[in-house]
Length: 88
Image (cartoon, rainbow, N blue to C red):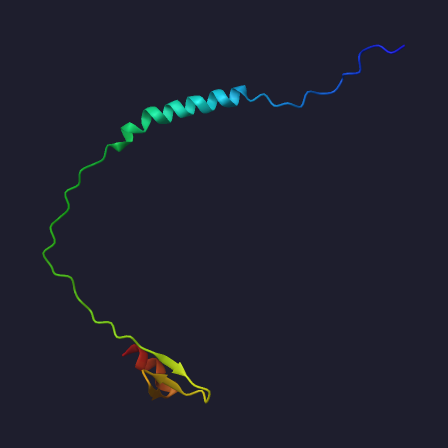
């Protein structure tokens, strides 16, 4: 004798109604608070009296040829003095 209809399977659907409720409440909160966040603090910045320092930047071209000779702007440089030339 078989008793029952054989539908003892678990229900695997997720109830999303509470999730939707929470998301709608959060949406309403953000919609209400977003216009209030436009406020800011006025800051009076000091006036600048000094002129900016202008520095000239020299562009260097460093080349190493097939004979392992180092050139800075087409001038040959010894490898031992390369660091000094670059710092100058």
